[in-house]
Amino acid sequence: MNPEFSHRLPLAHVPAAGQRLRLEAGPAEREALARRFDLLSLGSLVADLQLTPAEEGAVLVTGELTAELEQACGITLVPIRQSVREPIAWRLLPEGLDPSDGEDDPDDIETEQGAADLGEALAQQLSLALDPYPRALGATMPEEAGDDAAHSPFAKLSRLKPQG
Image (cartoon, rainbow, N blue to C red; front, side, top):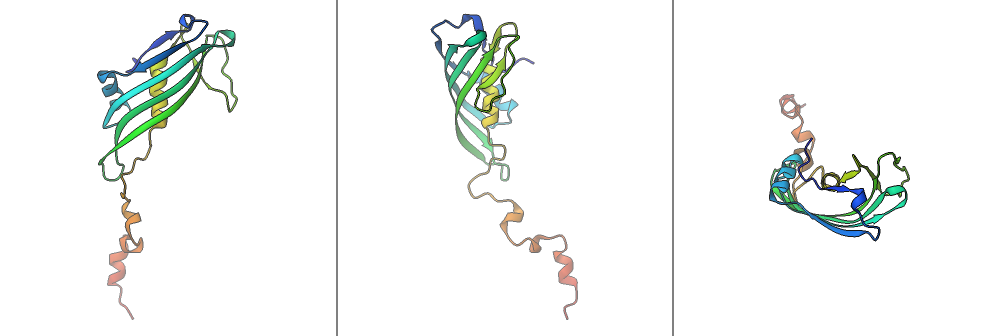
């Protein structure tokens, strides 16, 4: 698979003092990610990251992902604009280092050939932040709109039944 927003970072290139990194998806990358995540549009995707070397060759990544997007309402299909702000706490693992399973630990991202794809990790973080059931203000499902009995498949038959 070729990621739509790829930014490979060799762990060995992170300086001992750490570094700041800003990743921003370009127009073609945003369009491809919008298709992948079934969005109407992805207006922006930006991450401000702090990379810090850690024990055993790992790299800690902290920061924030922000995005502006539009999803279709699951009921009316009208566009819904959303702003996403997600904190980032990752640990990039060199090959051979086992992931940790602590509840409060940062998310572990395994590397291939000594490099981690930060762009793909950001895309996955965005996918987890999306509303799985977007709903426009005031949109309701038909069964939520009124009396369930009036919309029952047997409602017409019950009116044919003799009253008495």
